Length: 298
Image (cartoon, helix red, strand yellow):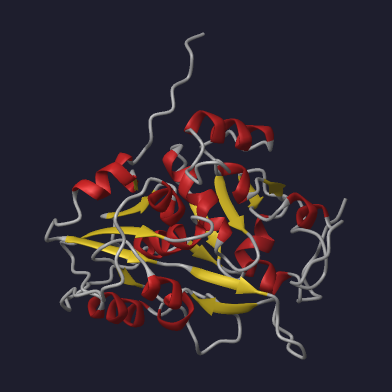
């Protein structure tokens, strides 16, 4: 049998630091820092965590020319209690337009910490019909480690016109997830750490455990801890296969705590050639607190 090769489905979806350094002056390029921090929840609140914008980090130092996207503040639906929920198309388009993203722009997204903040924005852009976006492999950590230039100058992108073209089905709710339990045509993947998936570790989302029948591919397993870049696709494919995810004809639903880490799993699955990919937006922030929804533990 011939050895299986793993060419990325979308080679332009992931860019390297070398490429970005050589294209910083491209007039159509729009670079954005998407950094967000999750801190322990404030005492007396019922929230699973406290969200801290990465704006202060951006103001101190960022990739030259880059702008900053406040994921919770301007790219989430702030009319609902749950955090990081997908905004309305018109609100998302207005934010992108303010930041200078037009229909002909090339967007590169990066963040500090885990790449999941950048992949979340990448996934939202696709939801609204914009496919000319890339994630910077290794993000801010790799850029700094290589001694590449940084800046504290403010972004100067002129406003543009972003036209949303929503793609139905890329974000799903709890009814779709519940209907998938026991469905052999669907595989549900939990991107949270294994101790949360098993139910043996403490969970700040609510009831411990996982959505029944879901398998575990932690987002962190897809990142090289030394370089902070994504692992090679053949290694990622092996991680998914070990969890029973190896049939590209199946529908895939990914979830995590708040719809962020799951986007990294989805990004890698997209590169591996999976096509029917869905993100459970509210994830365990909703599921674990709803006593009407089933939970499973080891």
